[in-house]
Image (cartoon, rainbow, N blue to C red; front, side, top):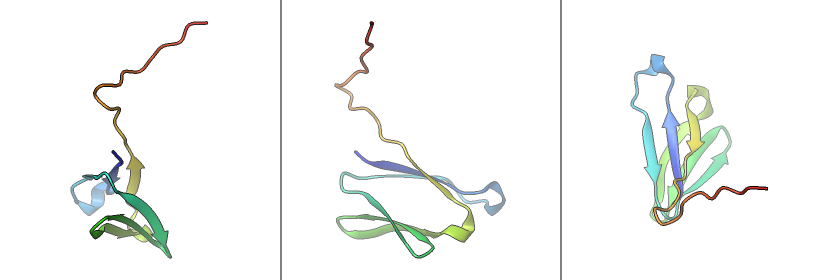
Length: 70
């Protein structure tokens, strides 16, 4: 499931947000970063505010990382 962590600069005193949805898409239009899902826009921020957006997908619970020995 796609998930994005939005982190605002400390001086803005805004809460960070985690947005996740099965149908989540990040696009850029002009100077805006826009997250949309099947219902439309769910988050938008202008680049001038300094927020960072990180994709933080999680591994499915039934899938564990495998180690390869050579």
